[in-house]
Image 1 (cartoon, rainbow, N blue to C red):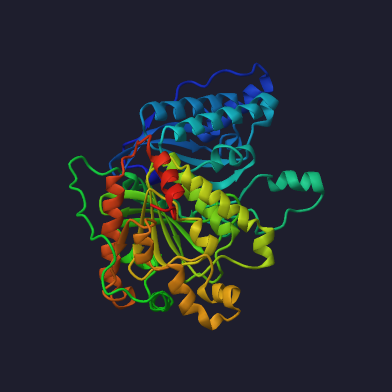
Image 2 (cartoon, rainbow, N blue to C red):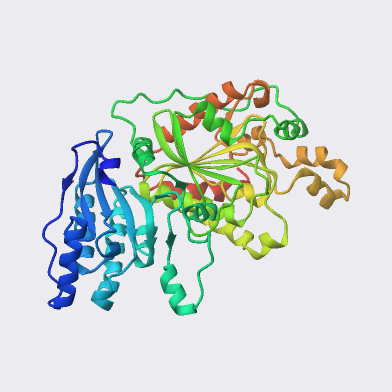
Length: 486
């Protein structure tokens, strides 16, 4: 595995002789046989190497050594390697293949899984990347500890991956575990892994991700100051709303494709859900890396609770990797159906807002097109707020507001104008800092508009200092002042 991923000849072992944990002759004989069979002295190999020239720490399971099981000696080797990677500020790549805890060592070995988890948690708390490759098979305590904590997690095609191994399930329940559940592909469909990749593709993905995470180089010139304020003549509110509903209007996928330096899309919540209405990605706007959350105007389903849980995963990712967070808002409204209610939509909106207000990293939100209701508000609070020239924000679709106020949805244009929904209205009210012009409509100039928007995002992110203790107070004060006289 290591030879496939690391640059040729670059691996340097960090392993020392495993600690002795047993005097039982039968177990000692098993260990000796495992060493002879596998060619390794334990079920894990640790060390460092280079991937495309970049120094990386690695943890790699050896399944031929007692099924890759983790005992006290193996766990101590892992903990020492993780702590060394943290001390030397190296990104960490874990390649798992294990049946879980080593039964021969009983409960003590089982408890050591928590020590491995603690070491990984400290590594992530230091702002260092932790990438996981789940190989065939990964089950039990390994999957339930260091195998499930990656910032990004990918899996080997057709790999068996699950908490309860199929042999154990059959022994306990007297029947086979249902087929197709504990597979890499099924886990990806349920938002538990970000991608399914062959081993020979892993090095390229690691290189791609780590390059995206690189901070701007010292001396990088700042992005030019984008134009501020609305561009006259402004459209009426209804004209702007109509413009944002054009099918050909560029959305977040178009901005990524046409205007970012690079990006890597991630999938799902990591907790068993894979909402399709929100894009989560690592992206680079010019010199500035960030975590990007973007509402997908082309999604089959309205924004639902799972999408907002994906958003909260992105917020955690930005915090742990100490990256700026950029949100792009473009939604006709959140889901209005029984499944959304039972899935906790309102609570997820509230938690997204609360997390954004309290996020310790710089934040920039972009009102890209339609901004309707709580689904839009969930991604809006930020240090800096940008809006496309024809974008708008309202508590309900204008037709719904007109029905409430006048009992007549046909009065939507009148209501929208009175509510002050346009980007220019929001700019004058202090809710939007920068309006990115559309000349005259983003749908007619998708490439040029996307590049203007990306330049504005790069400039705003570049102006926000990564460590600013006054930032959280300023966010709250900004919200507190909106709409008050004077």
